Length: 313
Image: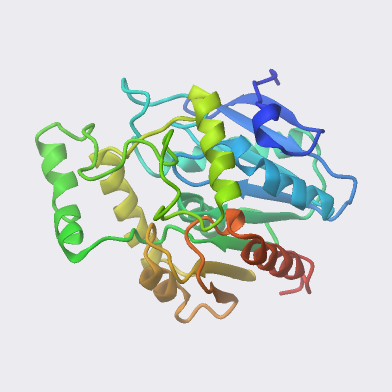
């Protein structure tokens, strides 16, 4: 495997890391990173959200490797250092939402090639939670899964929901699917963005950490999604709600101040899901792994307790 770039100076992650290029089954070039650990507790597959990149989780990887887990993560197609899919490299786009499963398969190939320790676990945030749930349903070989504010629905006002029901179809018919979704911000954590009122975290240190990454590395930048991406994402959420729930232990976290993904849809996904538990974090926003120290420590301790629990399910 060819070595890929990695901004250790911005990640603030473990000293030992290996970043490599991999090629998906449709020839998309993807970046994967692995943080090993001598703890021998297994390997956590870390699925990032939309707009995200491997280095964003450097501090998270530091906590997880310290706890004894190896960590493997990926830049999804269309973001980070992986191949961009539109002429406008800042446009968040994917041809088909199922294509992300090709990325999952490529990540697993790296895990196997590097002989990372078993068992495998899943930790998935936001859009990664949508990709991760599909992967679980289709047999992702993990023993337990933790979801952080999973995108099983997108937070919208009633007016936005009415528009979202028709705009992607109209855009496709008019061959305008590559237009930005109306109202989408240019860049999350944009340079100079005010901390006050941001929808992502209450923690000024983590907000500054993420802003600094975007200021220093242009490959991390990604703006709003295309209308085509929006249609694909909403359709995938509908499909996932209609499918049988995976039969393995699952723990989901969402904050009371969540306004990026849909909390009612997360709650609805848990209805009748016997092996899944939903925990609500008071006062937390979208980035549960990058919240204030007290909230972040709660997420970490409860997640680690769950992963280390009775693996018989």
